[in-house]
Amino acid sequence: MLKTILMMYITLAPTILAGIFNMIWVKLPVLNALKKPVDGGHTLGDGRRIFGDNKTWKGIAGYLILNALFAVLWGLLCSQTDLNRLNLFYISHGNTVPYNLLIGVLLGLGYSLFELPNSFLKRRLDIEPGKTVKGFWKVFFILLDQADSIFGVALVVWLFYDIGILLYLGFVALGAITHLLLNMLLYFAHLRKNMF
Image (cartoon, rainbow, N blue to C red):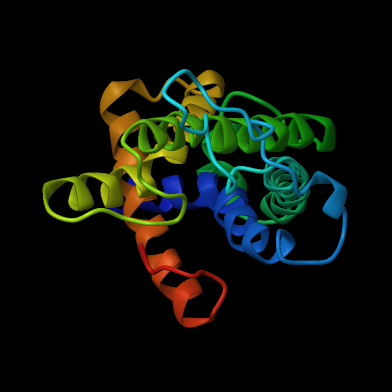
């Protein structure tokens, strides 16, 4: 069990690092031309935004660039240590720079694209971007906010190594718990406006 959890963390390390550094990236005064909403400010027939202001092209670009960067760096570190045999991406494939770039871009896409349905649902329920609701829905959306992107990331892992449905769900649970803890740390470091 502990070895499986260790393998999951070793496999997810580039995405965890990319998620942390993306919070810094979106605040930096670089490539601000990309700081435009993915939905272009458009609304649907209900008069509500499709995704809202918090889902920007700069954020997606950050996930792609940072996941690719950290996948390459992590791959280099893994290739020099025993981490290589514990990383699920390298069990059936060689640890090469082009392969790691591909993994990184796909992890970035999985992370950012799987956040969008959650934002879409929140806009339909008239929940403001970055805000939470009260009662049952608050708990539901706190959990969904932590897990949504991990569904996409774990799917990328599954594309390269047959993890099966139970380990896939294990990735989602571990990723959600880790995401929750990191969000709390980022909040206390003043990199997030809300803890959840």
